[in-house]
Length: 502
Image (cartoon, rainbow, N blue to C red; front, top):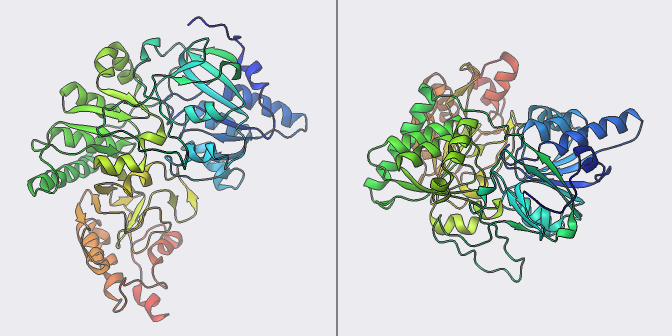
C-alpha cells in the first residue's frame, strides 16, 4: 500500500470540509462505506455548534450506509440534506421530524444527476479503498455505488485506505460511466458476466488531498434465519417461477434474478436454490447477500453482477479466503450500471422486491408508513420493477402482530403503480395480475394474498362499489388505516358508516 499521497488523520481530513459543502461518500448499504472521516466531521460539527457557529453539509452516498456515517452525522445535527436512500434510525428520525431535507431517488438516476450538476458542485468525495496508486488509481472495497461519479465531479478527494479489505480485490470491480447525452451509446452488457470497464476508479491525482488509514470492517449485520412466514413466501415465489418455466413463459435455461435486501429476499433466494425445477441461474442485481454466496458454493448461482457485497462478517471472510474462486463468479459495478433500465430490459430480469403494503388493485407502497413517515426510500426497486421481464413484490400479509393488514383498499403512499406490478406474493399465495382488469385484480389479491382475518374486510370494501373502471370509493379508501389510528388495529371497520356518508 505504498503511495506518495500525504497520510492524514481523520481530524485533518474533516478540516477540508466546510459548512454548506456537499460531500459524496462511498458506500452502498454499509458495504464499502466511509467509516472514520464521517466521525471526525461529526465531532467538528458538534464543536462548531457549541461555539455558536453553524455547521451542516449535504450528504450523498450510493444508498444506505452504516451507523458510523449516517448515524453519527445525524446525531451531530451535521446533515442539511440527504439523498438518495437511507436506513439509519437516527437519520430517519431527523427526516421525519423535518430537521433533514431528504430527496428520495431512483438509484440508477442519481449519478447522472450529480454529473448534470442538479445538486450543485460536489466539494469533496470521501471514498473507501483497498489500494491506491500514485497515478490516481483507486481500487474500491466491497461496493462501488456512486463513487466513480463522486470522484469525477468532486473538487477534492479524501481516501480511506482500509486494510481490512485485501489489495487482491483488484479485478473484481468493473468501473464504467456512460457518456452524457447527446453522445451516449448503448451499454454493451449482454449477459451478467460481461465486463466493459476498468478495474479501478481513475482520477486526477492532484485532487487527492490525503489518505486516512483505517482497519474497520463493514458494519453489516447477519440475517435472521428463515421463519415459517418467510419460508412460505420463498416457496410461493419459487413455485410460481417453476410454473412459468413449465408453461413456456420463461426459458428452460431460466432468466437472471434481481433480489432486494433483507430477510425475505434471503429466504426467497434460498427457496429458488432448493427448488428441483429451477436450474442454476445468474443474477443481475444491486446487492449480494449471504444466501447468494451459499448458492454459489452449491453451484446453484453461476454468476452474480452487483454493486455491493452486503455480507455478514463470516461470509465476507469466506469470500476473502477464496477470493480467486469468487472473482470468477462476481463483478461489482457502479449503481448506474447495475440498476440501469436499459440493461434490465435487455437481459430479461425477473425482479423480486419487498413491499410495505399493497392495495387490492396492485399498487405498491415500499417507502412510507401510514402515508407520511419515511422508512428507507425507493432504492433500486423502481429501476428493476419498471423494466423487468416479470416484476414480483413480496410481503408478509400482516404486521404488528396481526393488527395491520399489508393488503389494503388503497396504499397510503404509492411508489410502484399497478402498471408496473405484475405479481404479488405473501405467505398465503400468489396473485398473478397479468391480463387482469382492476376488478379482477382486487378479488384475486384479496382472496389469494390477504390474511384470512382481513379477507372479508377487504372483500366487504370492494363488494360495495358498483361502478367505475377501478371500483374505488374515496370516502372509504383509507378506512382501514383510520381504524388502526383510532383503535390500534385495522380490523372491525364499519363499512356502512363510510358508504352511508357518501
